[in-house]
Image 1 (tube, rainbow, N blue to C red):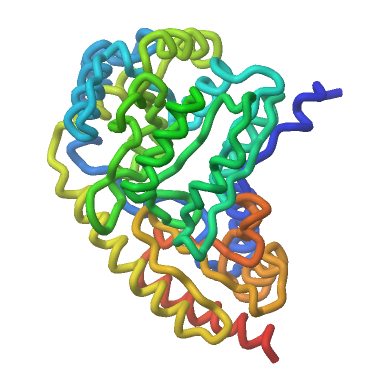
Image 2 (cartoon, one colour; image 1 turned 90 degrees about the vertical axis):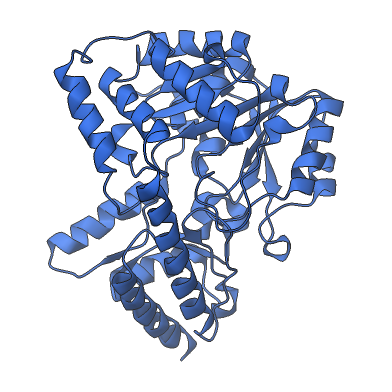
Length: 388
């Protein structure tokens, strides 16, 4: 018999749909994969070469729980330079992927009954961890009318004396939405006024198509109450390397490192050495990847908007689109199932990201232009079949 707390633990549907899609492929079906949030590019060769060097030079042993000293310094220097904030090695904790930062930070900060405000639709692990810890998840609706941002007045209405943490994600999964400078200013004012923490998920900070990424940590009074979540998976196509990090006030970093000691001991040493090379070495591959993503975004958005019954905003960041399919009269989950089973397109129901995702689908355009065109043809056939 499992512990009762396991009933409160959710999952990430992308991996469930991926498994179903792979099973269909094993039966000989041709599937276009638009379900998984993973760059389809190779890790840059200089990063791979540095990892091989590290393996051959003894970086195969335990390291400190918070990360190798040189790596923490390199990551801190990167954040200071890139975000324009004061950041020391003592503020950095390096983890095996970005999800541990979500789990460790909420475990360290949130008590039973505390309230955590999170974006909905949003990355499903936010709500899962909140529930698992016995806190109260408070959904903050992102609306298409506001380009999948939220109304600051709506946020203000959700804040109570029990509000301990607000989670923001910009650029955002699943919608590709990006918070404006004015949004960040207003959120910061509320955080300072009411005294809550902000977990700022900035994992897509380098995949942005107009302007420059801004972090809420730069706003007055926010450095001491913000946790930045970042990592290498998306920017450097390093999903399988499992390398993420958090930036936070030093006392919280010490608590997070203690949790890391209890859960994972440390992050792979040679992976950290490769991660330093990713941040400090040539950025040509990363820039080329973003340029290709932008071209794919435009191809997919234009193609979807050409299908009668589907409408799709042009996202400003990440590598997802979140088309509106409400006029088809189908629940999002049914559309997901039919697209995969009948038409060979693996996508995700908007409700995989929360109740406010009903009426939408998420497509990842981390796939070739050729496959995106193939998917568009199949989506058009699916829509025709529904509208008959």
